[in-house]
Length: 134
Image 1 (cartoon, rainbow, N blue to C red):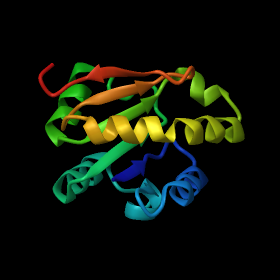
Image 2 (image 1 turned 90 degrees about the horizontal axis):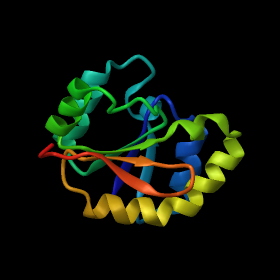
Image 3 (image 1 turned 180 degrees about the vertical axis):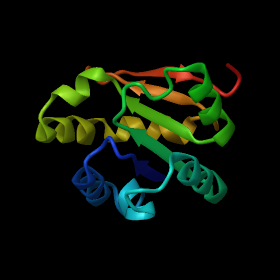
Image 4 (image 1 turned 90 degrees about the vertical axis):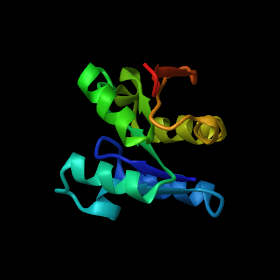
């Protein structure tokens, strides 16, 4: 499974998670794959065309508007968003928690339907955010 971390996640987070999950899974940062100035619409479309990608977003607001949810559903990408509390914790703590949750995130991503979204809460729960049919 291939995960892309967006601009709201630290670049080193993608590298560290990739080292932990490789070779079974890969974690790539948006900037490594597309550069720093690539418009969202373009990289989302590129990932959808490639297939097999899951987005891990550090933006707690991702998927909060009906228009945005519709765009994600239409892309057929599964998306996991960190809830608000994640941005308040130090980077090392954030990484440690993500590393512990990694098997749970991968398992959920493997079973995810195309075009669905989840929120990863600070307590480790992964809750549905939106689905393809909603």
